[in-house]
Image (cartoon, rainbow over all chains, first blue to last red; front, side, top):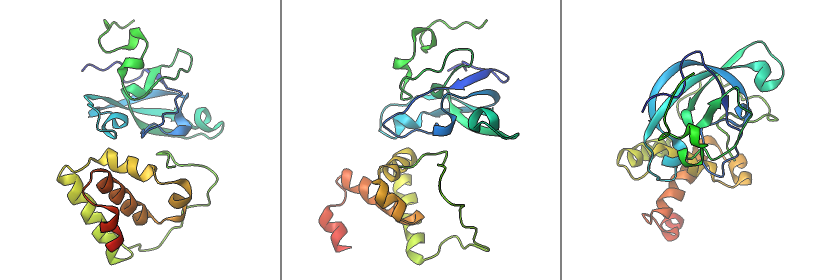
Length: 117
Length: 91
C-alpha cells in the first residue's frame, strides 16, 4: 500500500491506551515529530500479537525533539512507528484504536480517496 | 506491565563488564526453545512479546529477563493446548 506520509512530514503519534500489545511507546503518545525515513512495510504488531489478519503497512522512522517528549533536553529520539500509530501533526491529538484502520476517521481510511495538499 | 519505551522511576540498568550471553545453561535452553517454537510457527514474535507483557505486574517485576521469557513460552503453550498444567508441574 502507498505511504500516507513522506520524509519531512510532521506527524503526531496517536494518543491511545490500547488494552493489547503495541509498539507505540507510552512516552511518545500525543507528541509531534518529523518523518526521517521510510522503513518498509510490516504487519501491525497490535494485530499479529492477537493472531488477527495483519496486512503489511508502512513503518516510518520518526524523530521527536526531547523537549516535545520530556519537556527538556536538546537531543532527538527516533522511533520506528507503524502508520496506524500516526496522524497529521496539524490535527489535535486524537485517540482511537491502534489495531486497525476501521476506527480511523473516514478521510484517513485506507479505502478513502487519497490526495495530498 | 511492559512498555516498549521503558518507564521512569526505576534505578539505572546495571552495567555488567564482559557480560556473557547467558548467565546459566537453562537460559540458553529457553532462548533456543523460543526460537524453535517461533520458527515452527507455533506462535509469532508479537504473540511472544504480548505473552511476556501479560505477566502480572508483581511477578513481572520480581522475575529476571529469561524467567519472563520462560513464563511467556509456557503461557502460550498452555493456551494452545500443547502442554497442560500437569506437564509444567512435572517439569
